[in-house]
Amino acid sequence: MPRPLASPAPAAKTDTAPTTTSTERTSLLRQPAVLAVLGALLLWGGWAPYPSAPLSLLLFVGWVPYLVLERQLTLQGARKRHVFAYTYLFLVLWNALTTWWVSYAELSAGIAAVVLNALLMCLPLMAFRQTKKRLGNRVGYLSLPVFWIAFEQLHLSWDLTWPWLTLGNGFAAAPQWVQWYEYTGFLGGSVWVWAVNLLFFNELLKHIPSLSMSTEAVLGARPSAVAPVIAGPAKSVPFALAIPFLALLLPILLSYLIGATYQEKGPTAEVVVVQPNLDPYVEKFEGGAKFVPYEQQLTRLLALSEQKLTPQTRLVLWPETALEESYWQNTIESNPKIRRIREWLARHPGVALLTGITTIDSYPNKEAASETARFRDDLGYYDIFNTGAYFANATAPISFYHKSRLVPGVEKIPPVLASVISHIDLGGTVGSVGSQPDRTVYPAHEQAPALRVAPIICYESIYGDFVAEYAKNGGTLLSVITNDAWWHDSPGYRQLFNHGALRCIETRRDMARSANTGFTGFINQKGEVTQREQAWIPTASRGTVHLNDEVTFYVRFGELIGRGTQILAVLLLVVAIVRGRQRRNTTPLLS
Image (cartoon, rainbow, N blue to C red; front, top):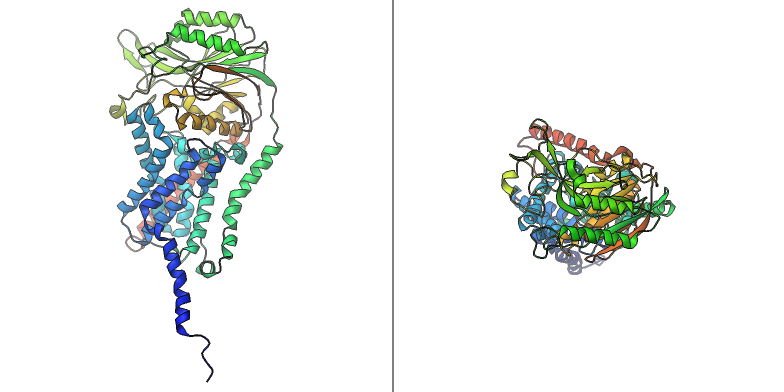
């Protein structure tokens, strides 16, 4: 009889070794709290204290820990409340790490922004779980980016709007990677993030037997396709990761190709932006410990402007609420400071001025008043506005733009929260201030016919669809006026400045930015920062901008991705509800 080819003992040793190694490598995957913390830290990379392009890469794996967490708990048959608890932990940590600086202005507002926004973010993730439960893993996982981006679209326009953490905004520090935003807008970046995360997660499942699907991989791979990767030699891993890496790299290559061929468009104009650097807590507003009288504030603004003016200057920008005293719009011309500004403009013919200002406008009666109007016996019905005032020259009537995207809980209090947060004060007016429905573009400059200024006030610059409306209305220069000093020396003003680069790409418009303090400077049509002044010093900057009047695909058609995902989300929910009723008490949690 032939001798046996192998003894049992060595074979047993060979079979058990990989199992032990796999268990050691995946031990952390059984700790949901660790995965929640890891996911929050990775997503934080897109909004790091000192943002950079390499850190933005973390977004492409930032959702993988949560997907593993959710999969692990599902396999364990965890109760809904346990899944929700770890989901909320992950989201609240991400929110806290990225937007903690809101608490500098008001602790209660900062806490509310983190706690409530994380709670709202749970909604698309819970919708994903229910869809996966009723329609299976393949449809379930593909529904996840649909629900999430539909939520991001909703977060752009409702009363509780707070789109700071829209995933597509996470590439603000890497504008060279997303030149194709001129077609998709920033929600295209959200699609990109989700696609790469799901592909990496799908490949991860094939290498972790404890998480493998019993019948299908995340995106529908058959068991026969999964098994060889799990049991195969190590050299198969690079090939398995080829698809997610291609999904990551190809959009970057496309972006570099677009950027290399794009040329700045439009005639040029010289613009001066001013940064007066007045501390809003102690210097800017009356009652502060080191209050600078308003007349002296105006003197500083004029002096800084003079330092950079040349005969070619066509526009000067002063920051948000540069003129803080409340000015009644119907009698504004009688104000001594307005007369002083007109005298200064008369000495500099050809120069226009856009300044931030707080204005008040009255209504003849209750029927004519807006929903945000206030009432006093001595004043009647009136609204307070965070305003941009445009002086085309020394004699032309002032054109007013009233800030329209208001900070929830500060400038706009949703009725449902009014009784809860009406006491919050972030500096300035408490309660809902007035707004306007349309995007105002100021008339063409008499000596620079292509210069049509789009006034954007602070928080408005994080809204891609909103800023695109200015370009659609004929704006050729994005002019941001802001007061970033509320957030002290924190990531807040750095992130807000970087978001401007994305708006420039989406609209292919130059941006001139004037901050009370924070970052004052210029960004070109490719999202490249051409000038940026040092923060926390009084200064001014002069730059030459291009005035493009062409309309991008994104400007012309708007948020096709956002609206499309909302339609798909509704259809998915309807199908899931119908399927759930048909299979009530018969469909197990795991498909």
